Image (cartoon, rainbow, N blue to C red; front, side):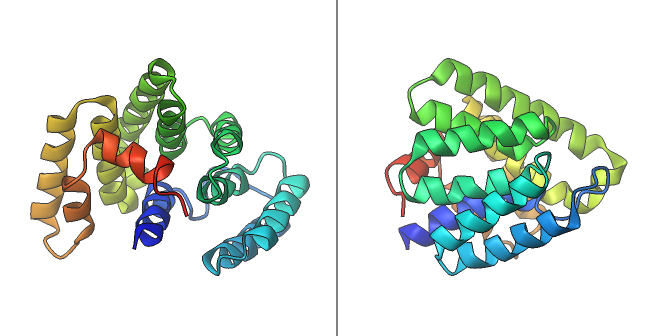
Amino acid sequence: MTRLIIVNLILILFASCSGKDKKEVYNPKAIELNSQAVLQMQKFNHDSALILFDKAIEIDKTYYLPHANKVGIYVGKKEFEKALTEIEIAITEKPDYAEGWALAGMLHHGLGDTLVAKKYYQMSVEIFDKKILNHNEKEHIIANRMNRAVSLILLGQEKDGKDELKKLKAENPDNKAFDEFLNRNRQDFINIIFKNAL
């Protein structure tokens, strides 16, 4: 059960950016390799997935998603420094990757650098605010609002984050993910990654 929660948390954090980017154009072969790697990752074939992610990166060094996806594997192996390195590369390649900023903040936080973590959480909130207001991002508005709420909780603004989650739950009563997030606080999110890795 814990394994499923971790995988779901990481996938939810990446959910609104894992589709095809409309603004950036990445090498199609790199995209294909990344997709194959994700399939391997879902089957828990992590070594095969890492090889495919690395091949995708080799083909297109600007493609941030393989770096982001490698984070899930490294977190599962409790190789947190490697996970942090990969997510830092991802946000360098894609500075508006709000989910990446939040995850990097969680990794910094868990590794003891709460001051840097706070800056990263704040950056993620600012990016989510822009995405929520952006008319081109409407198809992802629920995911962006949910991720923003989690970022607010991580930032220490638990009341604001939970209020947003309650609004989302009221607007989407069939979505049970909101219940899971409403029952968590900042330390719970950090613990999911650091204490309950695969």
